[in-house]
Image (cartoon, rainbow, N blue to C red):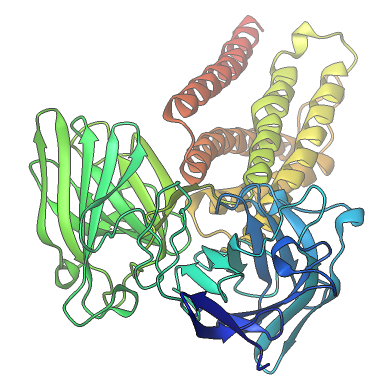
Length: 559
């Protein structure tokens, strides 16, 4: 035997390819990322209904990075199980609970049943190897037939968000390694195998690609949100194929129920800043923009030479805003649109004028399969903790500390006001340091530049000012005894202490509001929820300000 498998058709045998129970089969996951696997069948068993079968797998990646292969019931990440290898450690089994790294959890020790598991980075390659039981209690079974797998890798050896470096695919272990997914079939068998894609549609398996429809022939549709529809079609020149196409374009149509500006963005990481977008304004322009920030003045049209859209229009008719355009998928110096997974962003306003968006979200759309999945940015819990901690510091304890000083006449005599003032400020400083540390650590974890926007730079300035305020409080000139006149140095210190304190408090109020907006943009929070939180925030801050201003003025004038 030569390790091949034969398929019987009528009275003839047709040799198809290597038998993956004898030799390793191979599957190109992506350019520079190879999967090799072999099914181990115990003596006296057969692969189709095997007790104790295992699969030996090897992933070979060109570069140094963490690697992962996952086993899924529906082709989606959440709820799947994975083997993840990080160079310098041992590959282990994980539960994929969400998109945030904090929700990627190690399975319990009793489920860590991999054997011969290793991952090494040598000679410019990362190689992960392991053997796994195909059927394990309470886990997703790997069958001798069609399996839904997912692959991913990082940009380096630290486990972090994978960006575009991932895809779902279907691998038929019984059909000599027929893989249907982003990269097509390995050792394909005729006729092509038909399987269900992630949304339960039967795809065409054309060139080994999934998809409920062929989006190179007719328009495919994707509901972005209620009342907002995306339609698209890929235009492939004669003699080209969509995967390696030179000159491919995409026709896109956005249909919004209402009159407002509409936008579709193209991103490398699912985030707004640094992305590019096509924005349409009814009765005006449909242009390409650079998204350099969250404010209107940082959303700028690209230079004229990059305005390459054709058949572009945005109209309002019959109660709908409809934007249409054709865009070249690969343009120099711009984010490329792939015939595979793409990070897109959508947004729309509440009126035709281009202002802050009324709603928006990030999502991943696979143009080869039509599968769309909403994306949540990582580290949501950490940024929420950052916001809550700093609200307690600057929205609660610091205002109460100031009120203890201004309203000291309401407190018992004997300096109790000062003890409260100092104690509350000490707590707020400790919270500020904790919140600041979370911000710095999470920014580093996300591989983002530190202090790169006004919110972060203001946070750094406030941190320095707060430390100076504390030092000033410790080395303050002594208050004169009763009947003595204050020395000029004491008067100057009091003025400086109050001015710096008021400045810090004003900056804190602005920072907290800006943080609510940034969190809403980053995690695509519901518009009504964001509005409710913003209203509640300003009501609370208004009460704090009123107590400080009116209470302080009352006792000042009374004295």
